[in-house]
Amino acid sequence: MQLLRRGDHGNAVAEIRAMLRRFGPVADGTDPEDFDSDLEDAVRAFQQQRGLISDGIVGPSTYRALRDAGWTLGDRMLALMISAPMTGDDVVALQERLSELGYDPGRPAGVFDEQTEHALRRFQREYGLVPDGLCGPATLRSLRQLGRKVTGGRPHLMREQELLRQAGPRLRGKRIVVDPGHGGPDRGVVSAGIAEADLMWDLARRLVGRMSATGMDAMLSRREDTCPSEPDRAEFANRAGADLVLSLHTDADRSMYAHGLATFHFGNGTGATSTVGEALAGLIQRELLIRTAMQDCRTQGRTWELLRLTRMPAVRVEVGYLSNMGDLRRLMDSAFRDVVAEGILVAVKRLYLLGQDDQPTGTFTFGDVLARELERDEAKVV
Ligand SMILES: [Zn+2]
Image 1 (cartoon, rainbow, N blue to C red):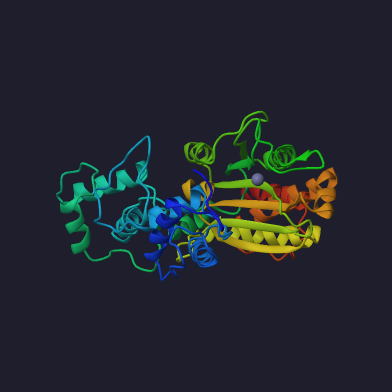
Image 2: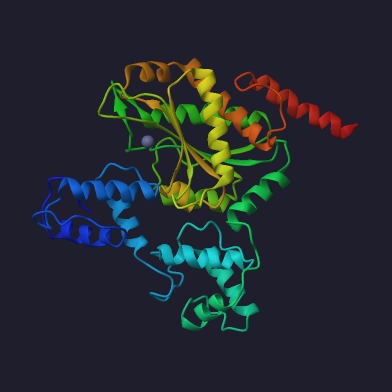
């Protein structure tokens, strides 16, 4: 679709204005077909609320979010569509309802996928309904009549925490998908002849090498010469049954002064947050800030495809801005990339230690991590 931004004019603008009205008042301006500053403010407010990049521009993800936000449970029949999965706030409501009743439809990300259908069929079977996996009037009635069985917030996201606790402190055997951004024909940000795709490929290789040395089952989401779509990368991690996904990118900005490090986890801005994802993002942020002295651009919740469609905690790291000379110079230095890889590995180790480590942030080394893994082996033998 064509991007719509301030200054644009036409039917599509009036449509966006009408869609936004459902979430709050939007001034009419002189002409509803004019993309004026009031409409831009309304777009920004909506983007912020939904965990999107709040640039005031309506592109594919904002348009999708606007459409998704318009659905209320009961508006339409919900079913599994393999080629074009149904998405929307009504799917979120169904997923949350199933979770409350003790079923596991996966992350309440608003995508009616196989796991959601599986949970729905189980519910239907156990409540004497036709187990057809369709959410129509009869199923809805039953869903509404029943009291909640699980209390205390977002059951799927709590399950993530429980899995983490059960996983134990050792890295050995944990399956990690490392996702270098872009690749192949998609170079990502290119600055002074240096491409994000190549830098992140190199960083991913350094990270995977270290992870493998600790006994982790680390996998790359792509080859050097390929660029899978974001949903394909998520699907790869889901199929691999990964414990965690780490996506590596660098940022760019029109301003050459923008610089620093940011980490992102799944969070939809209305309270559904992957707590484990947020914890890992925070650990990576802290380790890397102290090791690199980069500017702190914070840890934030987002609904980007990879974060939304993965079933396990996922974190995207934006390692600096290639549009900034300082960040670019650092990223070009292989010793710096080693520091980043080590910091990320240590953050993963800390996640599995569940905060039960006393070593101050930034001081844990790759050697320490290896030694700890061996220590545990010996402890087990004794
Ligand atoms: Zn990127």
